[in-house]
Length: 139
Image: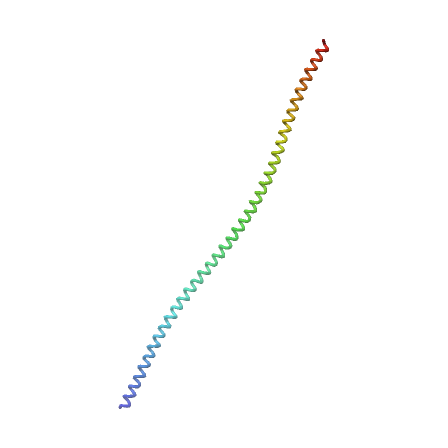
């Protein structure tokens, strides 16, 4: 009977040890499960951040393309502006030449008018002299 009681005590100790192992493993499983949950959350957070990064990179690429388009447009407008500036310089030079020609023509007209006045005066003098000569001849 004592042997059986000793055996029961031994089995009870083993059972207690097994219960302790079960509690320890259950606790460890709980901890691992919580760690796994946190890792899943972290993975989801990382995946979300990666999606945001991809979107931002796509936006950046789009903005870069728009910036390139705007730079190209600025270059084209600058070329047009340069062409207009050249046209303005050319027209200004042409206007200057025309203005100088006009000034010379005005001077020539003034000279011609002055000479015409002298001719008219000389013709009047000649007419006057001719009349005087005629008068002298008649006398």
